[in-house]
Image (tube, rainbow, N blue to C red):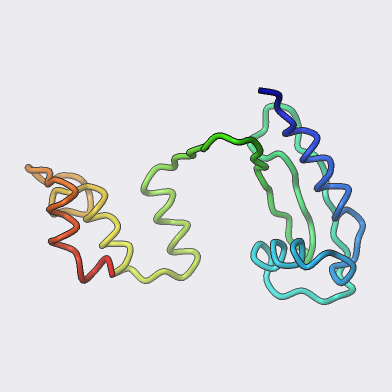
Length: 136
């Protein structure tokens, strides 16, 4: 299967680089609002290709902020994993309350602890039943 990843990255850069936010398609406005927050229509966006070997494929600058993006393409499912501590820190940064982070950790470790130091790991079916209310 041929990989068109680099072509996609260049197309994205071409679609948004040196454009005003208000000139972008609704799709790109939505994507950039998620990444950067509320933006003025006259805000200019700058996009550039990342360097070979970097995790980020492209970098986008606007609202005096720079964000990195990893662009995915293809027909197969791609799974990316993060350490739980990294993901929890990100969720906390997003404003997720500690009680929800603790539920995530309890479910992740499955040993009645939020640090994985418990003695017995439960089955997923047991965890879903035990933490049903918290998960909802």
